[in-house]
Length: 89
Image (cartoon, rainbow, N blue to C red):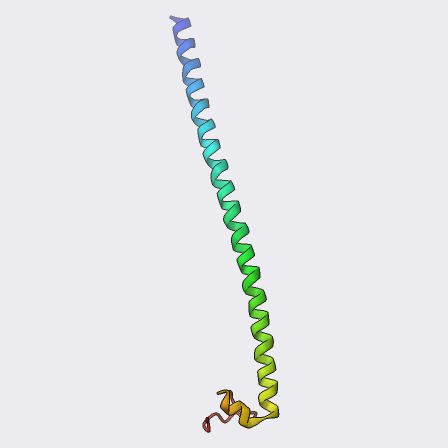
C-alpha cells in the first residue's frame, strides 16, 4: 500500500542519513589527523630551515677563515683561495 511504501522510503532515507553522518565523522577525523600532520611537517621544515641557516653561516665563516690562512684551509680539507686542493695535509 501507499503507507508501506512511504514508511519504507522514510526508513531508507534515515539509513542513508545515518551512513552519511558516519562518513562525515570519518572525514572530520581524517581532516584532524591531516591537520596535525601538516602542522608537524611545517614545524619540522622550519627547524630544518633554521639548521640549514646555521650550517650556511658556519660554512661561510670557515671559508673566510680559510682565505686568511691557506694552510688552515688545507688542514680543514677546504679549497685554498687559488682553488688548488691537491696539496692536502
